[in-house]
Length: 80
Image (cartoon, rainbow, N blue to C red; front, side, top):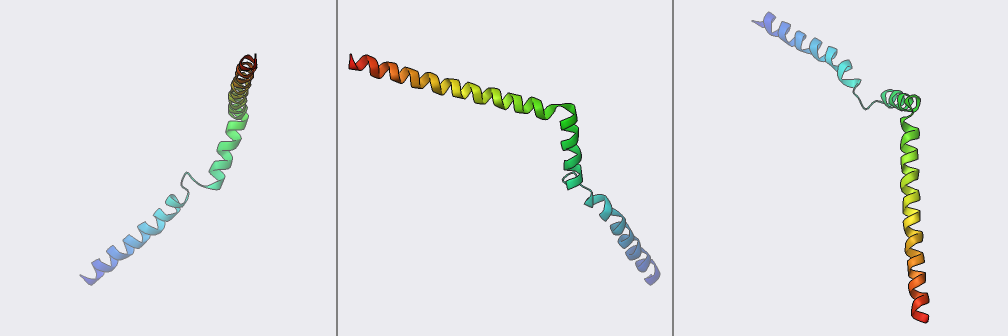
C-alpha cells in the first residue's frame, strides 16, 4: 500500500513537472508577439492599417473643415 502511494505521488509530480514547460510557452509571450509583428510587417498588413487610419483621419479633417465653412457662411449671411 505504501509503495503504491509513493508511486502515485511520484507520477503526479513527474506529470506536473512535464506540464509546466508546456504551459509557460503560452500565446502571450514576448517572442510570439515579435514573430507576429514581423509577419504582419512582411505581409504588408501594418501598411494597410496605417493607410486606412490615414484615410479616416483625412475624412474627419474634411468633415471638420466643411462644418467650419458652413458656420462661416451662416454667420456671414446673418450679418447681411
